Length: 461
Image 1: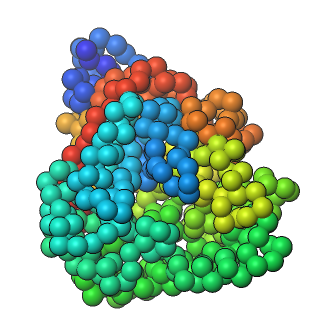
Image 2: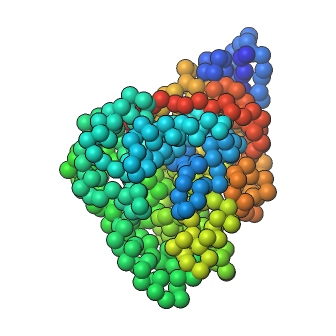
Image 3: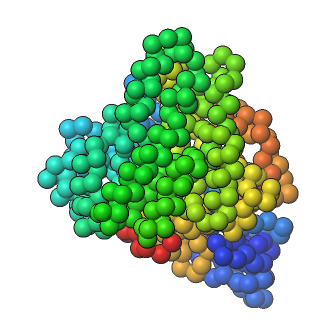
C-alpha cells in the first residue's frame, strides 16, 4: 500500500520546507519539495495542510519493567511502548541491567524476554554494567555483535562501579567501539548528607531528597568522569544532566578537545526544586535522581539546547504509582525515584520550547530525532525524513491544544506530573514503518515494534 502525505511542512534538523512524503513497503519512497507531481500513485492521500511532519521521535532513556527500590516500575514494555507511540515516540532504547552475579548476555536475554509482553514501537537496548571481570570484558565484543553498542554506568546506587572499574570499562569500550552513558553523582557526598538528614525530623520531609543530592554532587562526578574519559581517549555521554555546574564541567572538557555528549529531560526543563516543597507528600510525585534544580538551571538548559551544547532530550521514564511512592512516607530515602514522561515529551518540548521561542522546530527535530539516531547507531534508518529511511513519521498539528491528565494517559502510573498542563499541539498521526499506529493520542494498532540491532556511534554529531 502506498500512502502520500501532502501539504505539510517537512521538519529537518537544519531546515524545514513545504513538502510531501510517499510511503511504500515500510520505507520513505520519495520526498518532494511542495506538492507531489501530478500522476503520483497512492492508495491513500493524507492532507497535512498547516501541520508539521517530523521524523519519528526517539527516546533513548527509558526504564520499563525495572526492579528497583524494592519494587517494579509501573510500566512494562507493553504499557510503556503504547504510551511512547501515543506520544510520537517511534523508537525507545531501554536500559537492560546486568544484575549482580549475571553475565551481560544473561542481562540482555532477560530484557528481550521482558519485551515479549508486547512492544508497540521499535526498540533497542543499552546494557548496564554492574560487575567487571575478564568474562564481562570479553562480552563487550559480543554485545557489539548483538547490536547492543551502548552501555550504562552508575557512579551512585547499588549498581555503581568504583573509579578503577569505570576507567577499565572505558578503556575496553574504546577497544570495541562502544559508547557509554553515565549517571553522574558523587555517592559519598550523597550518603553523608542522607545520613545527616536521617538523624532528625528532616527524615520525613520530601524536600530532604533534593537537599541531599546537591548540584555540586553531580558536577563533581561529571568532572571526575571527564578526566577519566580524557585519559581513556573515548567519547562519553552525561545522561539526565540537570544544572549549570555540571554543564560547565562539560564545557571545560570540550575546550580541552574532548568529545562529550549531554542529555537532559523534560522535568529538568519545566520544573524547579519548589515541586519538592509542595504540601504533604505531593512532592514525592517528582522525586527522581538527579533531582530537579533551580530556575537558573532551567534557563541554562534551555539556552544550551538552543546553542547545541545539549545533544538529546530523553525522558528517563521510570514510572511508579502513588501507592509505590508512599513507601517513602516518613523516610524520604525510601521514595522510589523516577517520573513518567515517555507519553508527554514531544508535546512538552514543542509547547515550552518551540511555541515559546526558546528553540526552533529544527532544534526539536535535532534533539528528539536526528541526534539520538546518530549517537546510538540508528541513522539514517531512523531520525530523518529521506528516501530509503524507515517511514517513521509524526504529523503534529500546532493549531489544536490539549490539556494533559492522568485520566487520559496510557502509562500505568496513576498520576501525571503535568496534570492540567495545556499543550500547544496535538500529535495527530503517528506512523511506524509506514503503518498508522496512533491518532490524537490514541493507539490504533499495537504490538508492531521490532528489536533494532544498532551500529556503533559514528562520530558524526
